[in-house]
Length: 49
Length: 451
Image (cartoon, rainbow over all chains, first blue to last red; front, side, top):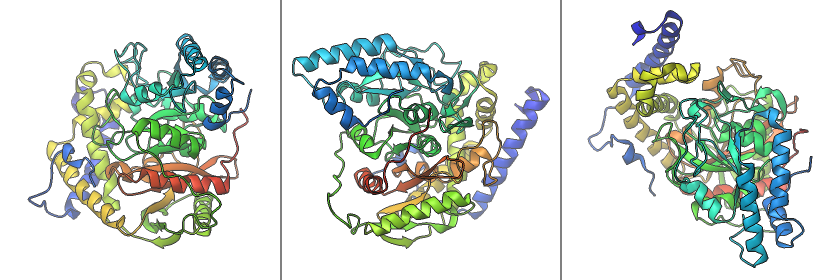
């Protein structure tokens, strides 16, 4: 997609993507491993008490 | 311009026939026209609102009263669907969208007699926090028109702060009810995820979106919340010097009290002192998982928003404003694996906050780390980038889905409002409203902007 955009828009998008990628990589490096019972879909996140 | 009053006061005037709903609605429409420079509205509905007010006045004369909102004018953010009225979502893409039904959140208020005055301005597709809308203009802060209202429910907050409508329906995906409430000096509740139906509300990010009420006072917020949710709020005890003696209030110094403007920190700590004076026990907690919530929330929001907008962002990109377009394109680049990782880690954030709320009743924090910046300013007064700074303190309760509200707790030296955020365990909205109502009754609901 980046190649299809004019330079100013591509530059902005790349900057935003790089910032997100860095944050996500940091998150994943610190994250605990997935447990077998971890829900994976948004519907599992309906709050119930 | 006439001074605003509360739902209770205006309802009793309507009940005594000292005022008709038609007179009230006409006065409010007149006020909205006179204050049109604030850009609070995308559409006013004068003909429909007056006709509905007349119908409700006739019902009242026959002794038929629908409830505490009978004849009361309200507004709704313009992504809440309203039958036969265009619902733009603050966009050019949906500029001509006319829903064939009301959203249940709006229908529940209308069924209790509320009159819809108009549809309020918002950040385009609710995807931002400044409410500087490229298609309908920036919603301007009534306390200082050169400053942002905050968003994305900015028009709703501006209307309320300037005395237009007795409540509004907002939505909140990362703070979009609480941020403008904080910056404009009104109250707003983001209920528990799913507590108020999201049906008929144009989505931004379906697993983070919440619908909730906004008002000038907590007392009015209670009336609206009860109507929208069907849940009764807990009444505040009268003539009790320690009405919060059974309440554990927690501060979370790390994260929620880091990098605040000094005036915001001072006002919030003063409000906590008032809570203590009212009998609440104050303690400190630490939930380490809060540090990852922002990246989890952003990743989920980016992916879900771009999924909803995928066709239009690929085929009609130039019809979006620049910041919304950039974010929607970013979301197209998020790998599915990262979206799923964010959902998985979100669960650990929810679990950690759930454990914390086993020992506390209410978490108290600032709603925003600084007061309203100037329109166009890229950073807040505390130096944080605008978007991430305004989202930081509010978004934890979208990631968890736990209820949270914002209420005014003071002003900075420039006369700009400061918001206190109170959060609780899921489905404890009644408790939050009780604590906020007691705090408001003891500290006063504050002043109004000189519009």
